[in-house]
Amino acid sequence: MSAPSTGGASRDGYGSALLRLSADPRVVVLEADLGKSTKSCLFRAEHPERTVSLGIAEQNMMLVAAGMASSGKVPFASTFAIFTERAFEQVRNGISRPGLAVHICGSHGGIHTGTDGSSAQSIEDLAIYRTIPGLTVITPCDDLSAEELTVQLLDHGNASYTRTARNKTPRMYDSETVKSLEIGKGSLLREGGDIAIVACGVMVSEAMEAAELLEGEGISARVIDMHTIKPLDSGILDDARVNCRGIVTAEDHSVIGGLGSAVAEYLATKGGFPLRMVGVNDRFGESGASSELMRHMGLTRNEIIAQAREIINSV
Amino acid sequence: MGGDAGRRNLSIPELQELSKDCRKHIVKMIHNAGAGHPGGSLSAIDIIAALYGTRLRFKTSDPDWEDRDRFVMSKGHASPAVYSILHEMGFLNENDLSTFRALGSVCQGHVDMKWTDGVDFSAGSLGMGLSFGLGCALAARMDSSSRETWVMVGDGEIQEGQIWEALMAADFHSVSGLKLIVDRNRIQNDDFVNVQMEVGDVASKIEAFGWSVREINGHDMEEIVEALEWASNENSGPSAIVAHTVKGKGVSFMEDNPSFHGKAPNDQELERALEELS
Image (cartoon, rainbow over all chains, first blue to last red; front, side, top):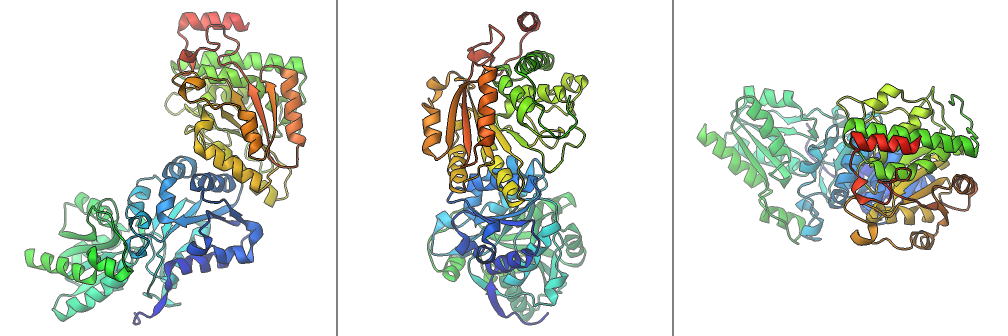
């Protein structure tokens, strides 16, 4: 894999994807006053007749999207990740229960959002959406993968939730490698035989940096971009179980209910396996510059390295 | 009755007969299941009978026909009213009705589009149907289709804030294909609406949100038919009918009685109810 380059934020990839999808007349975009932030504004600029502005009213937006899906449209409804949570029951009862393929995008997910403070930092979205039957849950790591995975939603058939990030992250893919991505299949970004770092979203680049530094200590770490939290790719975890000594998960999300929990649930059914989780430890965030705050909350390559060492030292 | 896509154009006496038959199905289904919501089913059924009997265009042979008019029953607990009319329209058979609320039944406790042919919305959680109907109506407009979307909500239901989000949005987008009916039966789960949290002058409130509104007696078939026709032809924006109804209408001991919001009649009560409805 080529060296990471600086790209856009994953929300930029979402916006680009909507533009690519606009060729299909079924595609409609729903906004709740945050189109400039989620990047659905790119679609609006080109296709105002297929963009529905619903104001600051997320519950209504989710059911309008459901009604449109029931009438043959493929709706993409977006707002901040945290505000999608306000409409959780609408997503559960109004979208997923009748099996309507509405695609929800929650931008500005996680602590990474930064200075807006804890009210805007969704750290439980992956957990709650993972509990809804039939809902696909995605959190891409960079702009190119966000674009690719969003484009794949067009004929996905199920409802989905995609979390994007506000700030730029290093690119993990290029225009060629990104084509290998598939919803529901983890992506092996780096080979390694001692530790498997299973990461998602903005923590994937941290995982790659951690693996590089671990290499210097003689610890060989593979890195998996688990962009789809549900359905979880158990095959790629089985391979890690057979070929590594332990797994470290890394997510910009509570350690309760998110990627770490999903991996733990799976490993437990296989008789258990050494696992450490890097994530938000059952607390709210606060204001601060993104990188500073990520360090403050323990969402760093150093934390991943420390957890990897612990596994190596204990097994 | 009705395999074609045109309007049914039933006469007033035919509609009155239809709603009477539906009332019998309603009390029988709920008695048989030992659970269900008779009060709000009986308050709504005259309007629903008129809607199916005079306005809605649908094909029994093709429930998913994309240009059908939509009926979004947002007060989904009044499912027996919907199942009774779907039976009369040929979507459900008598045996389906007898399985109401049983495991695997096409007649789920609350109306559910995933389970029942002819049902356009999965209800059960109040306050969501008007938004869903708005989505249907927006899609119809994008498709340049003349199909209409009719939504029925209860008066207790409009305590949900999402209703007012949808009212505001429908006016802003000037969605004339969206038609709302409020079943103003004055009773909700625990007690009378004016005890739980009075919703007041519903017509004025909806009008203040930019809708065209009419108030009717929701049990006077002539008034109902006329109001439905008015709403159907109203194309300056969304329109609403506030129907003043009696909870439990048609069964004396259920009328205006909060205890029959969500309680099944026992054997004797069923017998009495059917006598009154015969």
